[in-house]
Length: 365
Image (cartoon, rainbow, N blue to C red):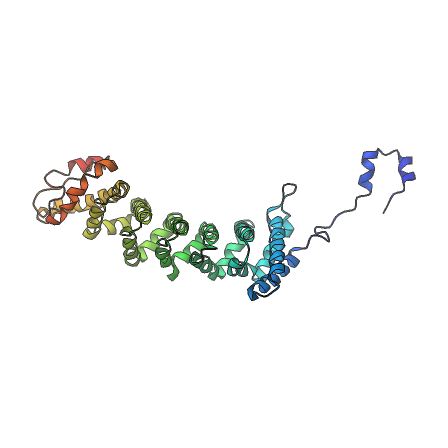
């Protein structure tokens, strides 16, 4: 209802307050701002046009960008206002019900560069959303695990690999989703992705691989125990990779894994095999001091175990003699380790680290 100027004068209302009497209550979504259901429908329809790759793709691409921006504004808010809780809940439900979350990942390659960034932000934001102790999107993805495998397969498409990696690592933060990936057949694809020729993609894949194997300690320990032979057979290939970065990162991660207290059973199994000690000794001969240094951290663990075994049965020690073996000083640096290459090179003649007692290594550990 409009108030007449004459009436305002009678009331002697200050000028700065008069304007408020003319303001009407605004609805949650104005005519220029579509509601979540409309945004989702428009976005899905235009993605379908992009899939067809016909003459209308330019217009459809523009509409997709607008819809993603509108969706991001609802979820993240703006500088002036916080995201409206009611609208966020409505948008999330529309994403689940329409299957748009799956479509966005499936059609990620068709969306322009800025749109890909928006999809990543929308996905991660909706994934973090909680209602009390519940995480509705985590529950949704758990019921639709192919979303995780679509993201993982994204490493095979250079245009979307890094975006998929960001979303995949956000999923791995949640233990139920990490468990699905770990215990799936697709997990072994990581061993292929970390060896890709494109450095950025291979590095991103390794970052995801490492996150998956170190974030949820108890879950990972159980997984490695159940799948020890298969996983470490593949892992050994990484340790012998021709790619310097892959080899070094894999060695460093191996050291973290076997020295983590949750993985004690894995460490015991790994260091009990003489072939693993031999592999580390060979890596100590690598041309790179950094590779030698990372290998040494694993070597000192494996060799100490073998030495403890050999001291119980002197006739079957590492050296092939009745002498006890000596562990190298734990404080060797890469430059000093370079000299170990010659010693390790004699391992095939059974003369590596012989002649001294194990007392020194016991003190260092």
